[in-house]
Length: 194
Image (cartoon, rainbow, N blue to C red; front, side):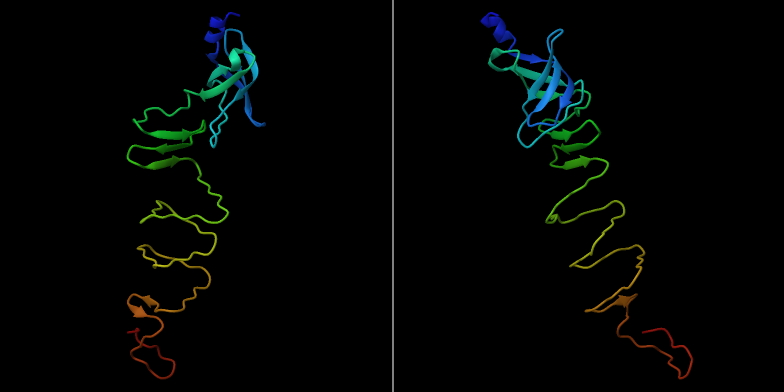
């Protein structure tokens, strides 16, 4: 093969058929030139990011040293799943199953997914002036608050409710220190508390 032809074949695109994601570098089975199928094409990914491209994805491959026997995939994309219509400067992380993490031009980071799971071995800190939940929230362990609780809906407690320190008030009446009117000896009822 003459050097000019070798140079022309150093960069190619193809179609991904199979992915082996078990080893160190991901290995692809790709078709490139007409009738050319290559097995064990190494895929080099950026450190800290990895993906498993679905069949039909398009790789860009480089022939190391000009040898078609040593193809390395340096980029893989899939037009069927890539989010479209991003504005200049926006970026996104996504997969083929509908998960999208969009960093938009207004400075928002929006995650769209079925369930968001955080596995943090030491804790989670959220530093924001306001956190909102549009629906119910469940706490499986101890709920500790420091600045108080404020709400407008009805509250239901099952089990013991133990209060210590400070005053417990209901509808303006202190439950730990109030007077009753109309106290009568015997089995009569008192009046309402003051």
